[in-house]
Each structure stands twice: as C-alpha cells, then as structure tokens.
Length: 171
Ligand code: K1U
Ligand code: ZN
Image (tube, rainbow, N blue to C red; front, top):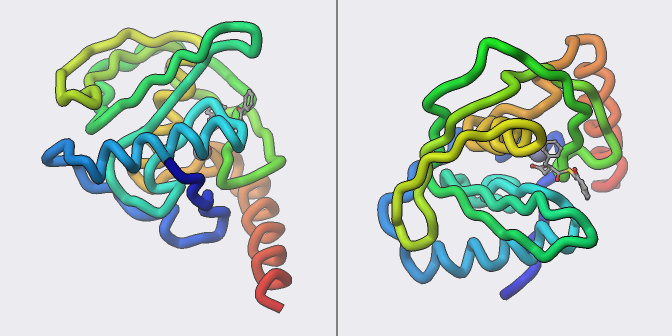
C-alpha cells in the first residue's frame, strides 16, 4: 500500500471524465488499497480515483464516526438511478480544494447502482451525508467539482485564489 498525491485545483486532470472499469485486476485492487490509505490519512470521508490522477470510475468512502469502527466502502462504475425531488443544503468540502467549505444544494435522497471489489452488483438507497457524498464523488468521475454548484462570483474567487497559489508554488 502507498500514499498517493491528491491533485489540487486548478489541476486540469480534475476536469477529466473518468472511464468505466471493464475488469477488476490486481492493479485496480492495488489502486483501491492506496485510495483508502490516502483518504484516511488526508483525512477525508470520500476519495475519487481521478483525485489521485487515475481517471477510472471508482470512489472510496467511509462515513463511520471517530468513535466507531471503520466502515470502508468502494464503489466501482457507480450510477445514480433515481434522485428525489426534495433537495437539501449541506456544507461540503473537497480534498482537492483544501480549506474551502460552501453550502451546496443537491437531491436529498438517491439510489445508486455500483459494483464492489469482487465485481458483484449492488443497489443502495442513500440519504443524509451518504447521499451528499455519493453525489459529490460521482461528480468527480464526471469532471465536476462542488464549486460548480455555487454562484459564479464565489467560484471565480476560489479559482483565482488557487491559481495564484499554484503560480507561487512554481516560483
Ligand atoms: O471527494 C472529496 O474531496 C472528499 C470529501 C468528501 C465530501 C465531504 C463533504 C461533503 C461531501 C463530500 C471530503 O472528505 S472533505 C473532508 C471531510 O469532509 C471530513 C474530513 C474529516 C472528518 C470529517 C469530514
Ligand atoms: Zn471532492
């Protein structure tokens, strides 16, 4: 297992549309193990493969609270097959946009279809933070960031701030 670097805005790879996984190989299993290590170390509650530079339709998630046992979950080729009309506001963060938190409105409940690491199909009905996190991560697989759901004014400010920091980092 190894820690991988998390791509930070404005890295253009974050805008790639990830490709479906056609076969679960040892390489995919190693990637997932590295994603869990990277997500726990960050720390985060979710991580999409594209955030570590691998544009494949995979994300990891663990919504267990600090005092609870770890509950690692992996979603391969996830698809939202139903969304509620009802919408909820949640203050989101993103490991690729550190220290920025903004309220995002999304469907309150979704049904998600996905494969596990054995290639077995599953369907889950999600609400609360589970629903928010699934939608945030599937957005990553489509090259969408949570700042795309906020006002243009706020988004432009955030993008400018990160572009400036990236420029400073290269000297
Ligand atoms: O995809 C990511 O960038 C991970 C992101 C997931 C997420 C957070 C909030 C709403 C929707 C999706 C994070 O994990 S940001 C860090 C975070 O939320 C957190 C970190 C430690 C403890 C609790 C939460
Ligand atoms: Zn994110």
